[in-house]
Image (cartoon, rainbow, N blue to C red; front, side, top):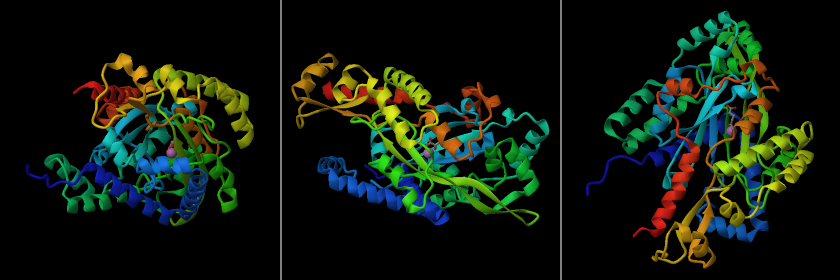
Length: 449
Ligand code: OOG
Ligand code: NI
């Protein structure tokens, strides 16, 4: 067999996510402080919980505990989005899911570029939540046209990045040397620009329509607006942020703390006000960049997700206006209706699992219908499948806490996946189908010789 001269796309993603982390820590020192706090709390959690330590050790998770799990950007045009799709493909990241944020009063719709297969996710699950601005939702035609014109004048990609993307597509991969150059050139797209491309008056007009529009339109590129490491105890990090000079958002998004974590819990320190030089040499500020943390649990089936959505809506109603701890107490009470042990989650078809033989090199006798019996007999092991995606209500909460609470009800009711996919130049994968397929494959591999 001849060896391919190309590096794996997963290595490119791994290198890129690390380079991005180094860049962001230099750009936003407070993000470095957040990483320190997360590392400290992770260490304390492991010290107090030897069983968790052993479990993460067996799963090979310890060394990459502090590696970032996601970031986010926002772009302004279909061309930019389509080119990003090609850029992320070089790193084995593909568009999964459609998120309509207009429902939450934010004029964007989004997808997550992420790895899809088991091994790719195990190697490095880094994802980028990517939003496309929806200028069509701006009411003022003059403002809309001005924004379009400004956007049409920028190219957010370095020439070398374009060249290497084309080379990747032509050759079917990149050599180690090309991959290094690609990471460096791709990083340019996500860099912060201290100078705006427009004057303060234009910035303010766009900002008055919606802060997010100014954020997307007035800069040379779609600066990475946050990165998100994984924490083993999100409640503790939320509690301790102020001690370390960070201003946390009011509440943790997503489900409450549980024995069996489900989906995704997130919180962040709020976006910082940063100095900007506008054209005409005027000084001003812009608030966009923050730091976030996440804690992931098991992926839910459509049945589990429906129950989650129902309880979340109920919990939000009951906890409206409450501060962080009181909010969590209400959510915990409401979520008592959601089974909290793996066996029930599995038997009631609420969550997705990976199945594998518990006996080395031996396949169990039987078929899918025998799974529960085989698990009881200790011949098959079921482990929860991690949720790899995002949650629209949580994402809206993250957006809003960083937009000074700005929302515009007039944007609502405008989901348009077809338009998003037309801009992207591809369809997005259905995230639920991906989990169901991976579960089905693990069952097939269990019984087939
Ligand atoms: C993206 C917000 C969504 C998340 O973790 O839900 C997000 C943005 O602010 O651009 O990153
Ligand atoms: Ni995020």
